Length: 168
Length: 221
Image (cartoon, rainbow over all chains, first blue to last red; front, side):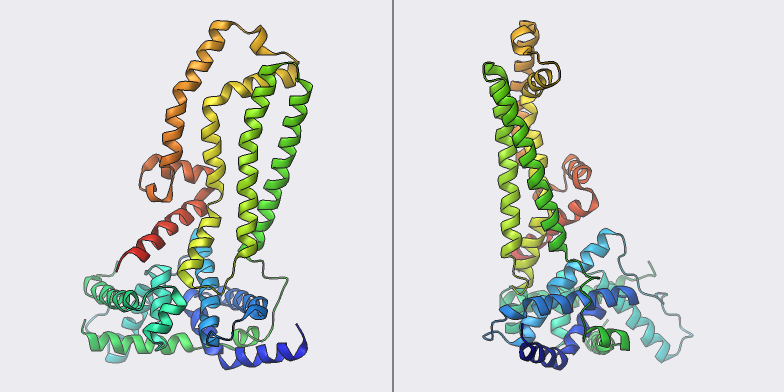
């Protein structure tokens, strides 16, 4: 690829780098894993850029590649037995103040999300990024109805997990 | 937990996901080609190795067929094993074709299904091995021919030979049933799970389970 293509690529990646951070933080928790995953995504984006179809929104294309790489990466880690378990997972006790209680809940949420299946994690990530159901469906390869049903189920699952959590 | 509280927490979680450190920021601006080896590259290397191995076995079998040209039992035995080897080679070429056509920018569920399918490629060899089981006599005939230059079919005790053929025939329906049962859809069956895990380890088992998971995912609505 020539220099001008490379520049266009750099600009597009830079303006969408938030996508990369989100994917990396969702699927990798250790610093070294984050670095490896960021590298792998960046490389795949670069390798596929020559085949980028401008009919597709750049963010959709980037999400597809990023999530495909991240899910494979996550599964590789899983096969090695490195499934993520977040820190500070103790249940709250009545003496903690509101801020601490919120942090504990946030850590628990982090843990419960990491317990979801890889594809649900991707779906949640896109939902949190406020993508429309149409765009989520395009990225994931699902129907729009399927997307909204699955998002409701994920939220329900998380709520249920909070209510049944007893410090397991 | 109330809907509002979960929404609040999810928003905070989203903010946490958006965080980045300097190292990651730097990495998004450069590529270290040395460090990264994609799963596809590994699969390509493995398939090429399997292809070469298959070709080598084919050459040996053709050699055995020509050396025993006047011995029908040897030719038929080598031909039978060659047939299975060719089936494995076709599977291997198909795998290489899938890898070369793979487009990572396709939708997530579609691609993950293809990838998991490619990772379960080893199952083909397991199935071929099981399907060959009823024809074990072919290996005995070839073994005697290869190592001792003896055509056991000609000189062997006829009662023993007939008993081997009957035993092989008895194994045939069992083999067919087994290869039909070995599928990601039957990972819940203990022996299927054990066989797959024995053939390809945890990685293969996880890929098979993932295939099932994606299929269920697409079906459920």
